[in-house]
Amino acid sequence: MLAEALYCPHCEDSPMYRHRALSRGRPYFYYRCFGRGSERRSCGNAVRVELVDAAVNEIMTGTFDVPVMRYEIVYGNEAEIEAELERIKFELSQLGKLGLTDEEEDAERARLRAERDRVASTEVVEDRADLVETDDTYLELWDRLGAPERGPWLAEHGFRVTASKERVTVSQGPASASVALSGPERMATVRDMKPVYRGKCGCGCGTDIYSTKYGQPRKFVNRAHAQAAYRRRLAAREGSG
Image (cartoon, rainbow, N blue to C red):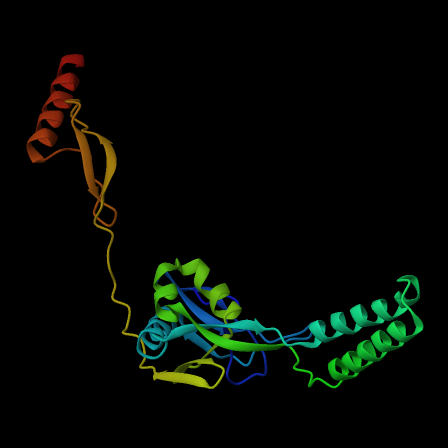
């Protein structure tokens, strides 16, 4: 669930990946620090996957039920000023083609120059990007995602998750929250009780025989079928004798 967003708190920028292990023949998974770079070395930090995932879900629910923020560009006046100066410059260059008298041309040139000076002295307001709220909250978006989508989504929205055996922390900019971890409960031994097909009854009646994976394999449905098979074998030997 946390691919691309989970890092080791003990090693600088060292990602943690899901790793599979076996206990009593049963698989389980944990996030493990793998180090970083071509000569990476793990510090050995490893935390059970279900503990980290549950902690992140708890933090997202308790801390990040807040509006999603996005940057919105607010344009200044720099482009407008440049366009006005280019217009005045062009009109000044065209005065000689308008057929004006000397007095009219001088007056128009003076007017355009005054306008140019006024525009050039205008205070420049640069473009800027403002953070604005959207209609969604981070928690709402989180709840809509499937587990494989959540890690990339966290990274895309500037979240960073760290995990150790003691605690899990989720941060985004100045916002941060942690959950203390307790050790996972010891894995109980669970036997597979699903019936396994063992074949047909040895007495020849054609009945299917099933038993559990860990049960003793049986050749007969019950004792009566076994005795019937024994009597047939005994009768066959006596007849051949």
